[in-house]
Length: 390
Image (cartoon, rainbow, N blue to C red; front, side):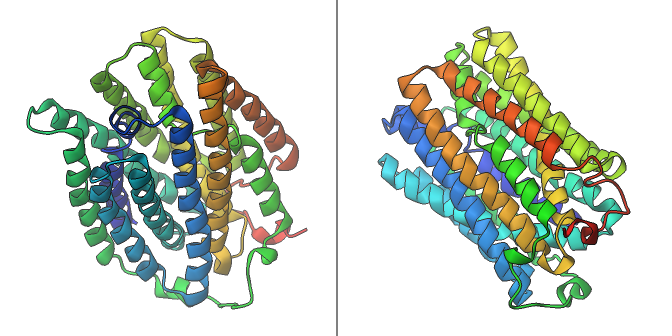
């Protein structure tokens, strides 16, 4: 678990060095529009999460989780310098898809390794620990990018090239992970698949979809912050603070979900999302916008650890990677839809419309969570998937 958390730290340093500069690189240096940004980021997230669903199913069937994860880490690492070589938005689009394909390929097998490394009563903490490493990397990555950009000899393209280094360090960490042979030897059912999931799992995916259709790319939060008159360097620092909050929240959120139940913590995260998006819709004040972005990190920290832990809870052990993968695939497909819609709203209606739209679907998701998932869903150590089959 520790090595995987360190790998997530390095991976997100590599990824988040680039994320806050990508919208600027795409729109200002490559001349793309907001619609192209929405399409690209939506397709990227959809690619990542669909790949996660497929790699999760594959890893459950062939029982080679570490090997599949390593392939994904390597693809993601080498895609970074390819982005920096882009001369048009189509070049960047292709390199970004390769990056997300690698990320999606590694994620579900890695999450299954995390889930099998601890007992059920500690699963939330395990995902919270990995999420803390992930979000800590997302904090340090933008800071490193801001520092490098402050050096006169370093330009934006150089950031993409340098991001290869932490990506390769993450790959090296996973090389030393020992796969839990007992978990891998669990009864393999080659004919098993999503049709074997219990009803409660499908209800959870529906709630995820209802909420997720309004959850567009964080790139629009970055552009909204720039709208308020914040400089690029300060925007990167605000984005780092957002990720620091997410990192600090992630492990306590996982721990509390083990004690209080996953449903309760997810409800808190949905409410925080709603408040942040309504604030982004109405605010043009620099300090308030910065504060909202940082508060949004509470949603990120909870959703990152608790969402996957609940998906792992609600499926049989031998379909764990598949369950986590299809949960992520649902998230990615809906983020594709949400980001395409957001791009159109940004260009054709107004920037605030992106966030009003997200707030509306956040309310829909909250209602769905309260109605479709029973109050005890994901509560504590005694949780057993058998009770949810009907």
